[in-house]
Length: 59
Image (cartoon, rainbow, N blue to C red):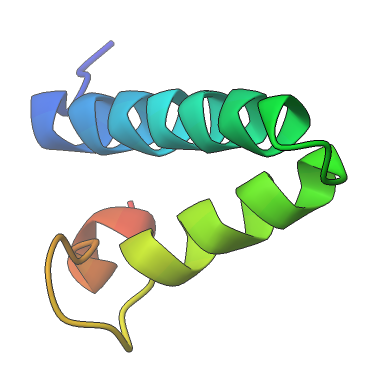
């Protein structure tokens, strides 16, 4: 079975960022979902910075 390393690293970065921001939101006494939403905004294709390659998601 062939695995795509960029896809796996993108998923790992997304999960890691959501874990980190979820933990930070909890420490700030905010709901964890706020951290998850912020992670989605930061990684999403409509914001500057680290952007997910949309072609990887189609694999």
